[in-house]
Image 1 (cartoon, rainbow, N blue to C red):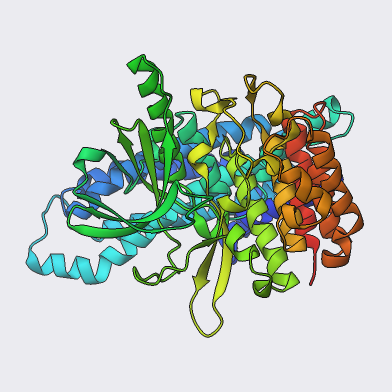
Image 2 (spheres, one colour):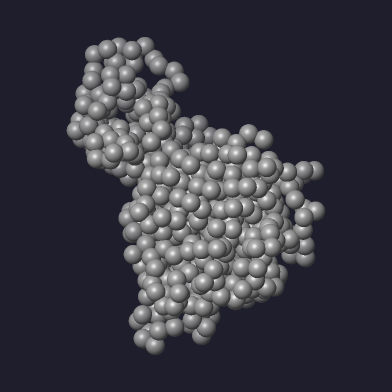
Length: 542
C-alpha cells in the first residue's frame, strides 16, 4: 500500500486532540503528569462533582438529566484510562502530550460544571423568580456544558480509533506481504458519513441498538396507513416498482420516494415472515443514512403488505430539494443520458462519478451489498435552488440489496433481466440460473465500473458501438458473457480517455479488471476500491 499511514494517523490525532488555546495550567500539568495520571485527576474531579450534585438535584428538573450524563461520562473516562494504559507503548511522546491536552479540556468542562451548579440553592426547589433567572441566566450555560460532555466523549472514541489504526498498521505489515491495512479503518478516514456508516453496521449486527433508535422511522402494517396515494412514477418501464408517493400519516402529508420489495414466496409462514423481517431491518439500517455526505437517501418508513407479500420502503427526499406535487422533476441517470442535448460538462460528470462511488463505499462500510447498481438505480436530484440549480447523484434501488448473514443476502437467480444484465458481474450470469451466489463488493465494483463508463462516454452501453448493441439486444447472455466484458474493456481502453482523461479511464478499467478475478478476497477488494477508485477520482482536476 502507498498510503502514508503515519501522516494520516498523525493528522487524525491532531484534529481530534489539539486544543485551540492552552492555558498556563495546562503547560504546568503537561510537564509533570503522564496521560494516565492526567485522566485519573479528571475522574476524581468528576466523582466529587457527582457527589455534590446530589445536593442540588432537586433545584430544577433540568438538573435531573445531569446524573445520567455524569454516570456515563465517568464510565467512559474509566474505560478510556484502561485502554490508554494498555496501549501507551504504541504512542509517541508528542501524541501522549496531545492526550494530556485533551484531558485538560475535560478538566475545564468539569470545573465550569462545578461552578455552574454551585450557584444553586441547596435542597430548595425553584420559585417562579428563580426559575426565570435559571432560564435566562444559567440554563444556557448548563446546556452548553452538557453538549461539551457529549462532544468530548466522541473525541475519546476518535482517539481510540486512531490508536487502533497504529496497532493495525503493525499487525498488517507483519502478516501481509503487501503491508496493507484494514479496509474498515480506511473507510474511517473517508469523510463525514463514516460515523453514520458505523451506526448502520451496528444496527445490522444488533450492536448498541439502544444507542441508535430508529428516530422517526415508520414501521406499520399497510392496513394502519390512512392513505397511500401514488403521485408520479419515476419511469413507466425500467423502474415500474419505484415511484413517488404521498403518504398521509398521523394528520400530515409526506411526499416520499418508494420502492417495492417482494418477500420469499415460501409456503411456510415462518420463513416468509423471516424474509419480511430482513427487509424491515434493511429499512432500520437505511434510516441512519446521511444523504448529503453518503449520497444515499434516508429511509423513513417500511411497510409490510401481507396480501401481496411485499414490503414498501419509503425514503425522504433531500432536504435542500424543493418539490411540487404537480411538477416533480425526479429522474434516473438512464433518463438523463437518453437525451444527448442534456450532456453535462466533464466537471459535473466527474462529480456524479465521485458521488456514486462514495455511495457504494458507504453501502459496504455499513455491511450491505447493493447487487443492482445500474443507471436506473441512480437518481439525479436538485440539491440547491437558485439561478444555477445544482444536481447530485443518489444511489437507490435498495429494494434488492442484501444483508450479510441473512436470508436476503444470497441470490438464487430468477430469469435474467435483459436491461440489467450488462451491469452484472460475469459470475452472476452463470448458465443454468439455479446457482446461489453470495454477492460481495467486487460484484458491486464491477457494476459501478460499467456505470462510470457510461457516465464518462455519456451514452448507454447499448449505444456505444455496434458490437455492444448486438450483444445487449439478445434476450439471453449466457453464451456472450466473455464477449460482453471484452467489448466493455475495449471501449474503456481505447476511447474513454479521450473523453475524460487518463485517470478517470484507469478507474473504470480497475473496476472492470480488478473486480473480476476470484483470488481477491473481500478485504483486498475494499482496499483496491479505496486506493484505486476513491482516491483516484478525487485526484481528477477539471
